[in-house]
Image 1 (cartoon, rainbow, N blue to C red):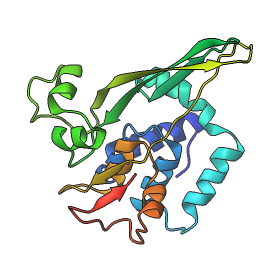
Image 2: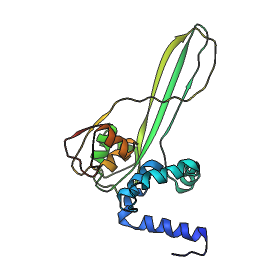
Image 3: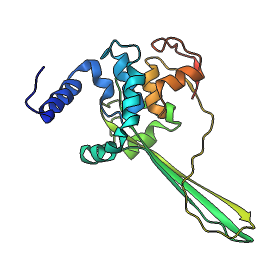
Image 4: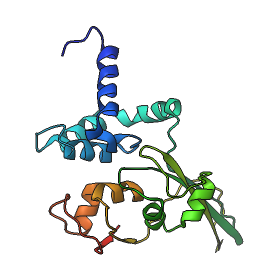
Amino acid sequence: RVYASDSESITHYVEYLSGCSRYSNLIGETDAATAAEEIYEDGYATDPDYIAELEEIINEYNLTAWDSLAFKYSGTVVTTTGSTSTSTSSTSSSSTSSSSKSYTVASGDTLTSIAKAYGTTVSAIATANNISNPDYIYVGEVLTIGSSTSTSTSTSTSTSSTSSSSTSSSSKSYTVASGDTLTSIAKAYGVSISTLAKLNNISNTNLIYAGTTLKI
């Protein structure tokens, strides 16, 4: 195709992806690495090195810097985390962390499977999103999955005052339910498909079995 301007080309590209059911799993995806994997698996490109080459370009030109601006005007909600810590000589210090999550409904999802993936309840998600009928959710709908806070205290002998962000990780597992795909599980837990495949020695990412317990 030939376009009169860059903006015309981009507009047609977005209209094509958003209007084609083949790429419906990309709608609402906020992680660049996951999007690169999903669009390749959807058959957008035949180059076996497409994912690596695309991610290389994204990283080289820091293209994810545009995400905050794009999400701001699209109304997309992304996961945010933050923490602060303070320490003073011979006194107690405290650390508080909080997180809020959102999930974009994919084809085949149910409120039950989403609640199970996030370790919460159907009623909690329904309440947080004002859902009157738990049996009715639609593809592309962005759900708020609550928030959690934790506080810890400790004693320090050094004299300093800092404010910083910290990240904590814990081992998780998920039992594959009927209708699950590696893509939907990766999206629910905010990890990449390749990470799940590597953790669980999965050679064919299109083949998983109900009842299998996956490491997250």
